[in-house]
Image 1: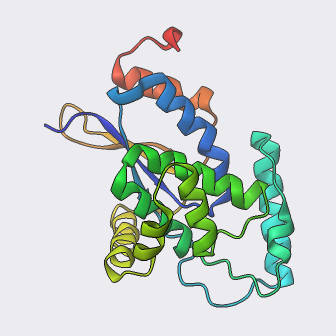
Image 2 (image 1 turned 60 degrees about the horizontal axis):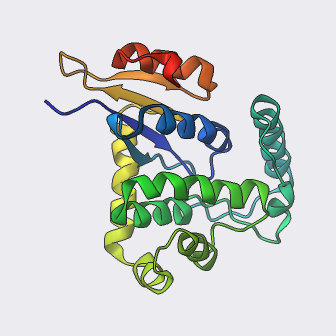
Length: 214
């Protein structure tokens, strides 16, 4: 039977996933390699081709405000003021998949780095060059990253993730699933954002580990 692991359905341009990123960090710190996290791109708004309207911009800023209130993470809404900005989540998701090819654990770190760049640092993560720069920070070869970025196989691999998310019945992000249990089944740890103090005890009980050790 496959060893216990988590499946994390997320999107780099999902604000609640950004809010959940410290929780993922705490899970990794608490369990390390004993509980691997498999990252699947959810596909929030892939292929968006309509510039962000004033109404949509206001709604997004409102959502971001809620995430800030719940998590304390910083936000800079100026990125939405870029003329003709397209909230297309596919390039950032594809970038994460590209990093995941090299190192699944590094992909989790890269996901957080992209989120920080977009939400807190006013960087346009729909641009391949920006995404390549962020990957290079983590030791990924920038030229190789860009050479792969428009390749059909990488695009197909990313869209396969979206299909996996849909077939799994995931309707929102973040979604965290754990399994397999003794009977081979998987169960939802959380649908949507939950703080670490609610998520970690669930995982400790499932793993049979000592929560006080963390």
